[in-house]
Length: 491
Image (cartoon, rainbow, N blue to C red; front, side, top):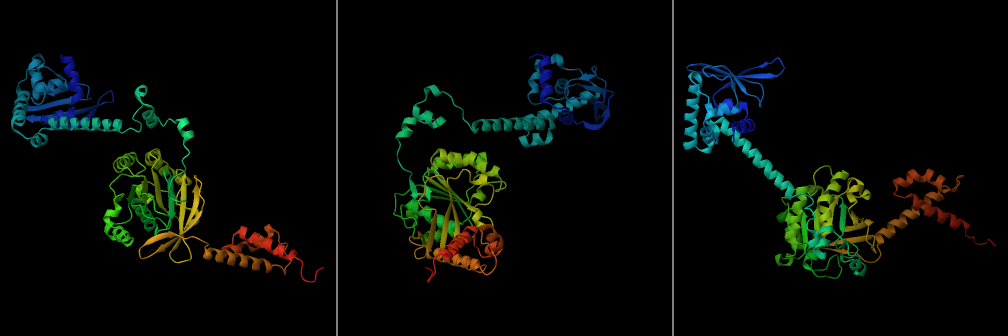
């Protein structure tokens, strides 16, 4: 390695500020040069006089203005290191490039001797902490090495954790591996697969599908789904349906405490620890938000380790970061987490909150439900301990779009209520009778009883009584039909 190469190496490896600082110089002041550049003045006092260097760029040399016992006025960083500073990796270089040494006397020689003695003490006897504290040049080089190491590790992690591992060596891949890597569809196999959808719970939870359940706060949505999760994991009856073989369930919970909520509920349902081996329950798990790349990678690790067939997320808003009403949050969740769950044919249920109007479903953008196949809105009914699950979206055929769920005690459990729902029938009948009476109230006035005119007249009062436009028009048809019937004596 020649002098030019060493000079360039020193320019890249060191900066003037820590270099002069290590030699005891202080920055006196700055001046503006004729080319509008900035000149930095470095000064140090010795027993033999003042030494002063000027610098105007990191790539350029320093100029010796005082301490002129040296025959050279222009000093490269390499010259400063070799002549005035002995330490680190440059000790050996000094012996190899002796021609680069400058002969110094006077104040410069005093600085060189002092610095060499200090460097040797640090090099042979001081701890790392002492060297970092006492040697600014060593400290700067050490910090630079740490930054480079950190940047290298970050680059390696970014490469290793990229979204796509790359498609390499496809020619040597088996058809099964190729399908796994690329998602390539085997048409013959697909056409010959006539197996029906597998329902974990009829009409409610389907294998491999994405589900959502918006519900008001405090209604007991977690209690319902904890009952369902435990029943599926233990192979017991769920919601009153016949028991099936147990499945592996992963429940992610950022809402309920183990001792105060989860244990009392499962004990009240009649479960013992040995019944819950297939229920993997993670309470307040330390994973990143599921709408981030790191969070998605954490979820993949959980899926690889626990191998669930169904995942509950309670509640969705606590497992994502950012504005939950934003379409971007929902899209990012699908990109980093939802897509991987679907790719593995793992069903999942997002338990969510609803806004003030429960009929509008989950809070947030419509994009929030784009990735979901089945959405069930949970609400209270007028009957105590009876809840309604009403379907808002179904990409898979269902036979029931509304389920009445009854909560029972002793043991604690939930059951789908079969048969007629008399409370709803009575409610509908009462509204119909009220609508008919409102219309009859107009018969003594010159009213055309057309649909448009009728709604214009009765619409405000209908809204206050919960009567829809459709229900009012059905009542109108009955009224008109009744008026057309022949009365007794008409022949």
